Image 1: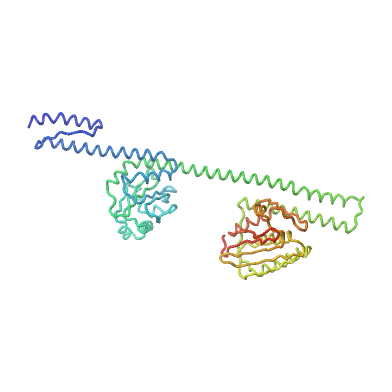
Image 2: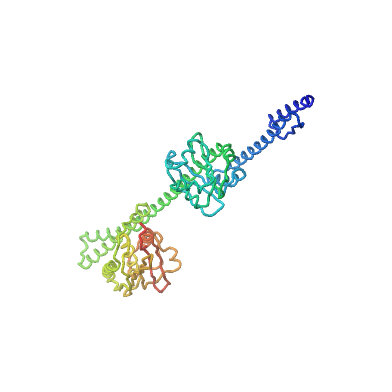
Length: 471
């Protein structure tokens, strides 16, 4: 027996040295019945355990290295979902971030093997009211292997109720700590009871430090990416507004120059004592001054409207408007304006009810469509107005007998500074902004605007306003 021991001990020392060097694939000789062989069996078991642990550590290192290849947080989390199943079982993984110095926990991401996900991105709760705060304080993951029983004992837990409704029966909740600071949680969930054991906690804890750092890196990169996108959008918007400003200046310089020059010329003539003007001529000159001034005022008002809308300071004051009474007033006002062209305006149909809209802006829409109908229709024609309640919208239609809208003009309709091929039949002037402003006002109310027309057969401009106001 002694000779056997003398043979084994040097070999056991050799095996121990190989294990120390990290060589775990070793053969340990054993002699049955020898007391010293008990040591050999322990060495053999140790070699197997070390080999298994080394293999697992190598695999987790590979996984975290692969995961670290991602930059954005959601890409990293997708890799986690794909790679972790060989170590931790799950049907679903959720990820939540701590906000406001750890006071709020907000769901950021989740992915599951099944469709219905109750706890969606943005779901949030107070940490002071959550059982998760104990996990943060201890740094130790929590296993719940019967979530139905857990919820039965804690029926006030809203997140547990949602998880049970989703079909979750077991959960492993793991803290994420980066540089000694808790940053969030990983939630591994299973639809089977008794899924998780201490071995899963041990596996997670071996990689939690690397995983926390990787996820925190991804979060910061994602935030920077979001900020970059926001800045780029703002820069694009500033560029667009700057271009719009230059267009405004060009329009003002071009379209105001002629009427101002005309008014100045008329004024000089009326002040020049060499010209003896009859009362009829003076009246004609004053009428021209009025028309030119009115055009300039309309242009400036349109430019101010566009500027207000584009600046984001466009607010609506929504109030109920009695449809039949309102359109009776509209009709009365526009009949007077249409008298010079002997144009007839009729309300063909008006459904009674309350239209929820901004009174001033609603009038601006209706006035623009009716005045355009008069402007582009031949003298002695008929304009028809229909006010229709078509749940969930009101639909207002203005039908004219003008030249209609060509296919080419349709592409420019409702755009800023649109100049269409059709010309006003009475020589009226247009800023090219009216329909663009109308479209923006209608959109602000939550409605739509359009036109039904065939060239040579008139046009029906229509817009909708929701019965239930948007704002």
